[in-house]
Length: 287
Image 1 (tube, rainbow, N blue to C red):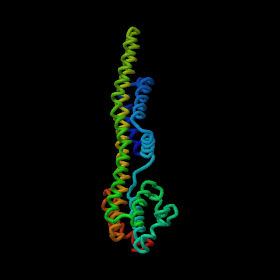
Image 2 (image 1 turned 135 degrees about the vertical axis):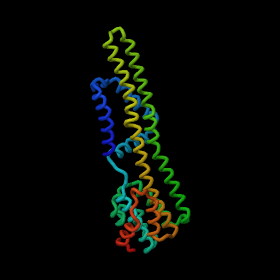
Image 3 (image 1 turned 180 degrees about the vertical axis):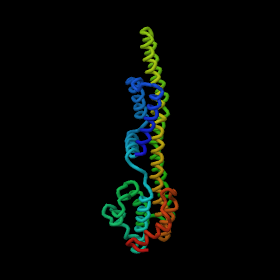
């Protein structure tokens, strides 16, 4: 919602300022300039992006417009979920976690926390982190390196759409110049038609330059930056899971492992220590 509000402010401020200065909005409406600039920008996007990255760009743009980054309630639920899982493993043995990790959709613990159960990436990362602990295939002190490698790969993959959108945003002012040059060529070809026709075509050419700069700095570059912030929020959730699971694998008490994860969070989404301790003590798994 904030993205749409910001976009509306950018558009209204630009058009409103133009009109307050005596400009007529219809003067800016030159379809040929829109076709050149938006068409070339779309072509650049397609040329620069593999198919899977294009799909990810669409997905991330939709998520930026419609969704929101996880807040304090989501992280609070995540920490409580981790505590319940760790307590189950400590009381009943690690094998007791197998039924929850192997089929989370049927897990009584996971189903209590839909904010994580319905988020495929975080759920998969958590389960993949716990499986080696249950199987005993690696040493506890090796688990953090394993999860860290997966986290790094996910971070690099998430950066691809941001880089592509940044490329398009940086290209748009130049594309606007191309549209302007094409407009000037048309103007020179019609110079014998009189000042009125020449003025109209010069205005169209300048509109092309304006549109390229306006779309780049008003929409594409800010959108890429917002996607970057959303990716950082997703990475923070995965880092929180990694810290907790790695601590539990090393033999830390469930509450201590969860406390380490809590301290890895940004202050804007970090639950209080006393608040978290009071919440987990009220869980059915015990203290």
